Image 1 (cartoon, helix red, strand yellow):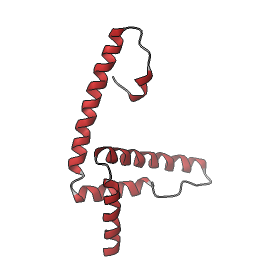
Image 2 (spheres, rainbow, N blue to C red):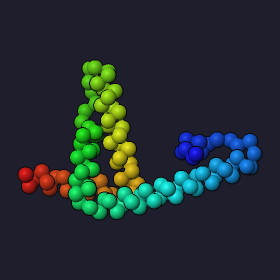
Image 3 (cartoon, rainbow, N blue to C red):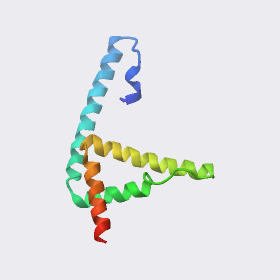
Image 4 (tube, rainbow, N blue to C red):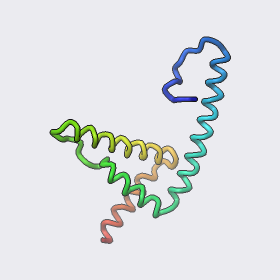
Length: 111
């Protein structure tokens, strides 16, 4: 199984490297397919609204400063998920996050 963190491994022989390259190619194709699916989903305004709601729940726009370390760890974990989602969205459709932010502001102004 290919993992991005394995990209700097040294191989003992050509066969290991070939297996690695095959797994990497398979991984890259799967990632490309996921990006295309996400790109299609992001064309849907209701989906973008839902994603923005999830990002808000992840607390990516909130302060991470808390006196209780356990609370800060929990919030940091939630934020990490939100940052992962942002990374995936931007990988699939660069610049879409700015459009989503504009849509959110418009919704706020209309309420």
